[in-house]
Length: 505
Image (tube, rainbow, N blue to C red; front, top):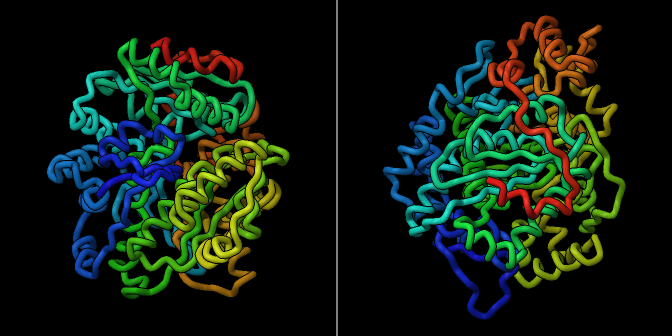
């Protein structure tokens, strides 16, 4: 299996191995890497997967996409990445299926896929606990002697998960950029208190797109690359533009389907829908890849907040980032440039079209997909969005009717499922990606469920304790621990100053 750039239109496109794609992160032409084929899962494969635990399933799926990696070492890495001490059991129970990604049944055939039981209480842990191990193997396999300087732009959860994954990993250093005021207080606190000798965190004045564009500009700057090389390091990425970050996300969708089968809640081959709250499109693209592999997903429900650029694109074929940017209670989705959508455009339309559309987006801030591509997109994806009032209402209603606490991102997903069902009448079971602990967003969650005088607006930890007392839910240990950790990273810069930051480590 070889990997190609989504923008390579040459007669003899440049190909790289899986290890090289993971090491580089972004292709030299600015495109994203994708394999030349998507491996299919047979009925026998599903029989085998049903008998496996999560780490074994992860190694099985990863080996299909990373054929140059040693299968035994992959199993070893997956065992370590998904060990119980990294993803402890939920004391409240009520879930079924393989940890660290259990399912919690809600009413009307909705199953919340809880992806936030890891060391930073967010779904990004599912990929960023294994990704550093994949990169370390890639460095060894390619004979790389330089340090990998990992650059990350985050709208909230990716930053801390990447910092935790790469903290003190030999041969690596990591710099995280996040937008000022564009993450929740807990997300900011998690990043600012990060330990480790190879980490750096800097706030950027602006929004997530400003931070993401700054990181992409660093990758595209050949003079900076040469300067980095002379200093003994090279740039790579832990964002989902890196295939090593995205491919582990396929695993939990395959695993969730297997868990539904094993529990008897669905029959073999029965169609299931998936709902994913997303801003950068990586998480839902992983679900699409699982579908292409053979998981019988019917519709993929793309859930957005007020920054509903993806909803409009799915419905009209027009992608237009020239719109007002909204800071919302679901900050991880406050994004107007959805990088991973490029991979879907390539998969459906090829490199030439992808290159043209990405050039139009860079120059004009918009593009319009051909009608045939839009029709194919609409046959699989359904786009819906919730405003702030609707999101808060979804949190409150879920607590009142289900006794289940959801964060604002998961609430957006739940609301999108209800809108989809009302519009289409499609009542198939739904796997809902539940992406973060509600305690990461204590203030809006407390307000939505009616916790009085929570203190969440004025005192972050008083808010956590008030929410816990009102619901009986335990504060996740990784979040509680940040209260006593010293603040290490409080610097704020303009986007123009980002290029010099990686050279500080």
